[in-house]
Image 1 (cartoon, rainbow, N blue to C red):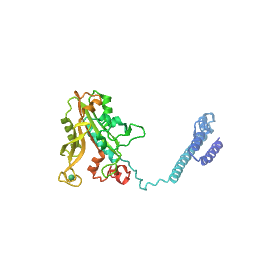
Image 2 (image 1 turned 90 degrees about the vertical axis):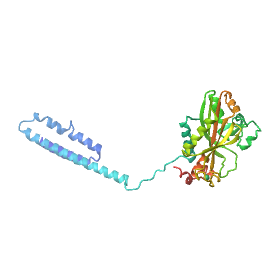
Image 3 (image 1 turned 180 degrees about the vertical axis):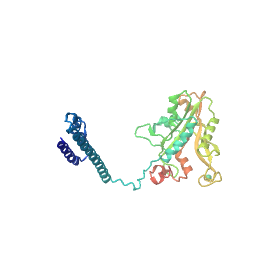
Length: 342
Ligand SMILES: [Zn+2]
C-alpha cells in the first residue's frame, strides 16, 4: 500500500508537469485530489487495514496529499503568470502613449442661432411648427394676398419645379396658412423655422438658400401692442437686456399695418459704424398685423380674430452678432469657418 502511494505521487507529479493550461489543471485536480481520487479512497478506507499497517499508511497518505496540494498551487501560480506575460506580450498596451483626441462634432452656426431663437420664443409660449419646403404657388403667394401678377411677387425670384404650380418656398409664410387651416378657430402661437430658396444672385448679404424664422399669433383681441411687446422682449433676451429697439413703417402684402424692427447697433452702441452703415441701427426683422384676407384664407373670421406675424433671418442675425462678412460662409462647408462656433 505504501508503494502504491509512492506510485500515485510520482504519476501525479508527472501529469502536473504536463498540465499546460487552466482546464488541464482543473482536470488534474479532479483526478488526483478530487472526491473520487484514489488517494481519497485510500484515506477513507483506512479502517479496513490491519492495526499495524494503519498508522504508516495514514501518515504516508497525508504526506502525499500535502505534497500534491503544494505542487498544484505552485503550478497554478506559474501558469497564471505565464498567461499574464503572454497577454502583455501579445497586446502590447503602452499606457505611456498620449491618447488620440476625439474629434467632437458641433452644431452648425445657423442651427445654433435657430435653437437660440426657438428657445426664447418657447419661453413665451410659442410652439414650433414645421412646414414643407416644396410648396404650391397658391400657398406661397396666392393665399398670402399675392394673386398672380401681383407686383409684390417681383420681390421674390423663385425656383419653380418641373411640376406646374409647384415651387421651392421663397419664405416660411406659407406655413402660416397650413397652421391656421389646421387649427382654426383655436388660438395659435407658433414659430415656423426652416430653409427658404430664392433664385437670386449670390452677394455678401444674400444667398439662394437661407433659413427663416417666422412667428404667428392668432386669437381674440391681439393688438399691435402685443406684437411690440413680444418682439421687444425677444430682442432683449437675444441681444442685451438694455438694447434699444425701434419700429419703422414698411409694406408687406400679407400684413397690415406692417413694420420693420431695428435694434441699436451693438457694435458701436448707436454711435455709427460701417456695420450699421453709420445709422446706429441694425434691421433684424419684418412684422405686422396679419392681413384680414390672410386670416380669412386661414379659416378665421377677421371680425372676431386678429393676429400678428413676424419673420427674420437667423443667418443675418448671426452675421451681425459674430461679424461674419459673407453669408456664403454658412453653406460653403468650410471647416475652418464652422469650427469657430462651439
Ligand atoms: Zn454700428
